[in-house]
Length: 182
Ligand code: DHK
Image (cartoon, rainbow, N blue to C red; front, side):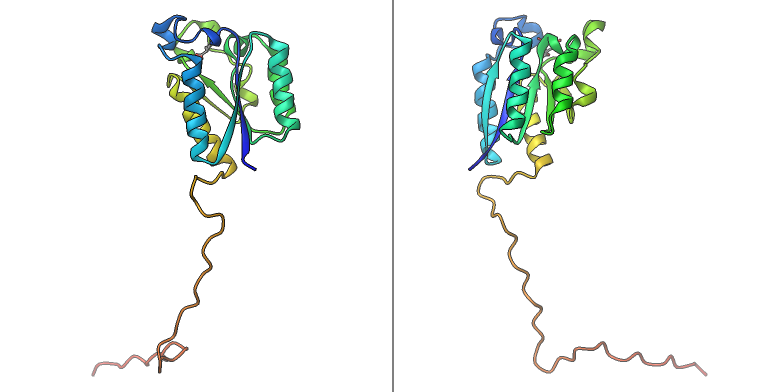
C-alpha cells in the first residue's frame, strides 16, 4: 500500500489564484493539488490534500496524520504560521516529519511575517519558491524518508562474487626484495 503525505493548507489559501496575485501568483489551490499528486506519484507516494480556515481543524488533521502513520506532512499554515502556538504544539507533538512551506518569501515581507512558530519544530522549511515550493517539499520529504522512485526496484541486485580466471593465484605475488645498485 502506498504511503500517504498529508498536504495541509491554512486560512485564505482557498483563494489562491485571485488573492494578491502579485504575491501568491495565479495558480489556484486545485493547481497546487495537481502538482502535489504528480510529484508524490514520482516517489510512489499518495497525497491527502486539504485546506481549512479553522485553526482547530488543522490541528485535528495534524493529529490524524500521525495516528494514521502517514509518511509526513507538508504544511502551509498561512497566517497561523505567525500566530498559532497551538499549531506549533501540534507539530511538536507528532512524530511524523513536517515540512513547512510558504509560497511567498515571508522574510522579504512585513516584519510580522518574519517569525514562524512552526519553523523551530518543523523538519525543514521552504519559502519564496511560489507554488513550486510544494513540489520541492514533497521531493525533500521523499528523500528524508527514503521513498522509492516509481519504477525503482526495492532490493539491490545481489553482488556477484568475483570470478577468478583459470590459473590465477589467489594471493598477491610475494614482494621482491629491493636490489641495491652498485
Ligand atoms: C500564506 C499566507 O496566507 C500568509 O499569511 C503567510 C503564506 C505567507 C505563504 O506565503 O504561502 O504570511
